[in-house]
Image 1 (tube, rainbow, N blue to C red):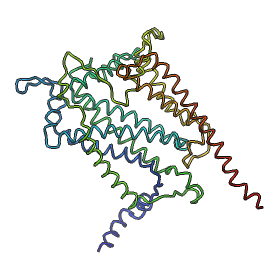
Image 2: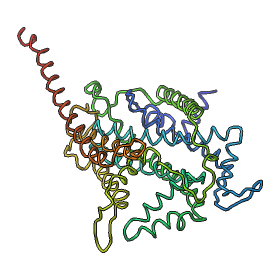
Image 3: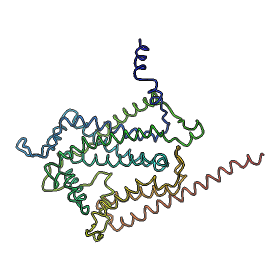
Image 4: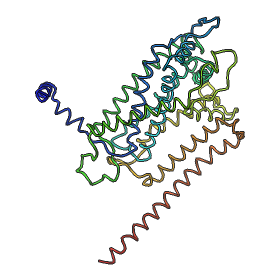
Length: 426
């Protein structure tokens, strides 16, 4: 009976062809390949928890009175979510899943960069990956405002000021994005629309496109797989059932881990800051924006660039110009590469010392700028941080380059010595 049923589906849907094309697709067994799946599962968890929160959240900044006290409706609805049996834990899982997704997408891109997996024919997927990171960060930024407490309003206000500082179009652009001069009555509905409709649709589209391109081009493989299978074939385990079993276990472990983290490390309670008021609390942006915040601190106040009848002040230079230039260079990474042959295997980080040293130098720069965001807490002068932001990336990059060259020289000598007895026997 079961075979007859499968035959019925086979006759109408061509099930065997689908299975052979997709369910038998090989997945290389390399731990770093799970980073992409962790990012995907983080998005799934964000959607599931977001739907739960959607039923109780009120996207409005209108002032309501409850128990003789006045609150913005959005703020009050979040306090009520926290009082539900599972409301607070779901909101905290949503929060940490967002951080996890951003972190894992960054790690995934770093793996692709350091192993050369951005090369031909995978330039398109590199660009898609950068867009995914930027839109994921925007999802975090738009969701940050939705609790509408004093902390989130202050932090979002900094974003409005940076956007408004863009020459020529800044004020008009900021008012459009924030639905008026921030904080405006329409800002919450506008950001709610970004967060639950526009950005998720963009992410779904980009994730689908990313997976489609990957399936078409196949995974890059560990270099240990070179020569073990015929050209055009991939060494790994099939999607069904082996890879699917691993993915289910990974998803369950992730969900359990996020529940544990949310229980031990709760997000800040919005009651602690209260609704927006005349006094603004001291805020620091989330970790993925810290480097921009630190850069703004290190740009000297006297630095101005006069261009086309406008003035680029330190806020524009540190908050818009330099970050945009860095992002543009990251976009162009595959197109700055001069290699023209197809890249199907992961490259050891020691194969290209210059690329690896530039990557570690940029990472050191971002870490230094992030530390500069806490300059007053660390009690280190801005002058020292400015010097460190120049010297530390250079020193780390040079040290990485020299270490790789020394390692390659030592390895070459070791291999040569290992082959000498074989040569003498002949």
